Length: 327
Image (cartoon, rainbow, N blue to C red):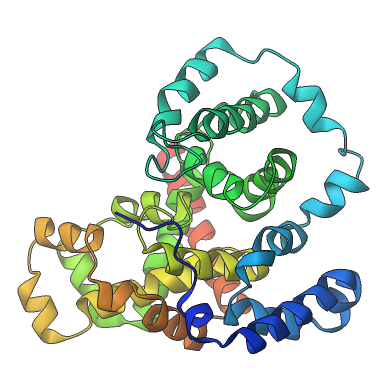
């Protein structure tokens, strides 16, 4: 998807400078009293993340929201980046990483070989990805990690981006980048059951034509939608994701699918496997635009308890299947 990475969020373009400065001041107050706001005023933090983090403070806010600030300044791992960065890394992983460097947002000034910063940007991207494979050699390298690290580098310095990247892999998407994609398959089953509850006609339509969630979830979830949505929308999704967690990814998926196949006319138009998958990979702007999508995601009711119950049933079913296959 073509993106203009210089675009800010639509709400920022509509807000007059005085109100914009006022929002920035509110965020600066929160960031200066972060522990208090997260423990005593979390709903206010969530509300402001849903409204959109000011571009000037987005990197700092993401770093605080995901807990990277603590780990890089006060945690037991505050020196880990320097340690793993100095090590050579696995040759196979390094080869795979190098193949992907020039594929990450080549139109962005940080990663464009035609610009003055592309070489340094790709160098920093390599450092993050290599360092992570040294930190977790059992996981190795997954291609979907590269765009995530690249987006982080667009918003913060190298060391900050590394600690945020580790938090994404450990705290938000644990197991997502391991071989076999078992965790993603489990979350695909969860998403399918959520669709059954929230937009049953779409669920039945996808089920009828055997459209497995993995066909679209890999690009959506593993890359946190940065390859699937317009850039201003991506930033808003990431703002909420860092605050509310992986639940946001499920909510975005439900909204996208509901408005792609929710009407009878849509289901009649996209009435075979190929057309459905093509639709999911080429969603129209009226569905993916920041103003439309974010409002629908915020208004979609999906609480943690409901997701927990679905997760429990999915895991129980998978365990029963495993037991039957072993007998």
